[in-house]
Length: 620
Image (cartoon, rainbow, N blue to C red):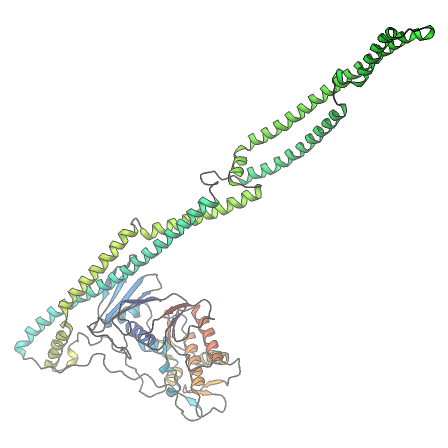
């Protein structure tokens, strides 16, 4: 059994409909004095165990309503709803949409349903072992019993939840009329119960719709943020196919080969450029040898004209002419060779440039899509593109999740239609509350008629009161004032809860030692069930130590009931413990919460406690 929520309305300090949400594991319901912790504890006890309401007050002109929603072991959802002013209680089964169908309307039948569906344990055992408040632990309830023994008085029989009114006894002639009138009133009260259930269902739907609106708006804001990020960071990837890892690997392998070939070709190109630079120009007019040869030839022809050559000097013309012609011819030959070399080198250079161009063209053609994508996204290399694609995939996944979440929340509707539904639910709830005013006074009238009919019988036991069992406590089977622990431990059980006294003593000592690091005196249980602290037990215990002892024993008893599917609910039981003992108690409760839901009503938030679900109650 897992408690999921507590709904409260018109019970101080909850003047407006309020929900306390609970989760599996350890729950801390935190609130200052007056915030309603103890009231919520007693309301839970009343709804789950049919106990009387102590310390709970109602607001005038307000419907005093409470409900608890819980999940059973088979996963089914149920709600127990009570109207304490109208003395009505019913059990509903909830469907997936949260709509309830009433299955039981009488306290005794609800009690039998709990025995069949949840646990056969009696309410006395459940209340004593699973619902722990300070009065069960306070040192005042551990009076000295001589010889260092302590005992906890058993819960006495409480007063009826609804006191009898003074009524007149009807005559036999009027009894039939009153019985008929009572039957009509009961039918109207059944209608009243249906209306109450419908109101609570409307409150649930309104809360759910409000939650859907808030979550949908949050999802819309997150989706807008993702869209902005998509435009800024991932614009180059939007609409483009994702590049496979194999293609990226091929690109990296081929680009290495291309770079090596480019380096080789560029080295050859640089060598050809250097050789071309060494060859220089091939213009005959600019060639020095040809210029010298032509100049010598011309000078040789002009020399006889300018001067008269005699004897051996007459041969200077011939020698100069032949030398000039030869030198010019040699220069021309050398020039032709250089021109041929230059032409060959220029052809080689052109071929190398063409190879470089074709190499880049072939690579770009083979990886055209990838190179264009890298340019579009501004990726410097493949690792940069990989990181960008990975971030984009995560972005798309987040976008998909938020889109699906919004669609699931809206379920085909829009935020505007949900707001209209919320207004409609509020109007319907208000209309039902107005309708309930027509039923005011029915409970008092039915109760009066019931009492008149009861008084008319020779024995009251022959009649079944309309509210005879409503919210009434289970009466203890042992005499008032007897030791509670003594009864439990000596008998070996409590109303269906089988216990081994030696095992309880062993576990209780483990828990008790945790409160002070193993320095505590040993707890011993007498065959009668009385509890002693240490060999020479003191005549009395301090309130803190008394609470440690009682907590140790109660948790040890609880340890003997691992198969009982009922949560552990505590109302500020750590108040009298010192910080060290309080921390030890919290660690124990954390361990218990791994196997059983724990709900701790407390004044302290225990911010250092990790993994606990916290609910903050507002001050009154």
